[in-house]
Length: 135
Image (cartoon, rainbow, N blue to C red; front, side, top):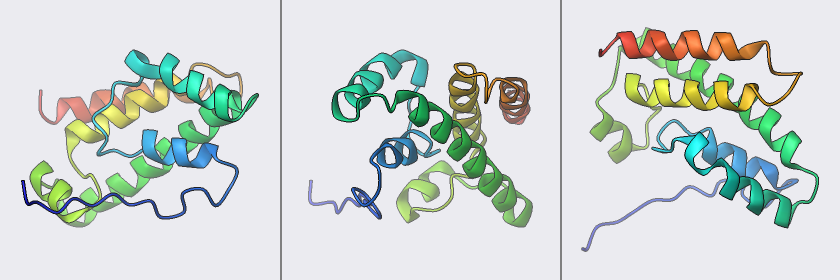
């Protein structure tokens, strides 16, 4: 089509490996419903890093909480941002739909481990608050 596309690999491949998956899954611009594809992702993690799935879930859950904090900070500074601008400029995903989806991702992952289980209600409440901004 003649369009330039950017994919930010940043620190890909420089650490343990689960971070690469986690940063992708906990990126608010990724239009992914994690419960629908979790098994496929889990299979890849187990195939490439046996025994690391639990660490992935916890790390990704915490990364989602970090990204939500970044989004809320952005909203406090400048309000919501149009999705088309976020995607075109590689800006923080300060869009309520993106933020809601990310919070639901965090809730899904938090529900799988005793260490993160207390975060489920917080993530779900946060997702509901984002949804209320456009519902």
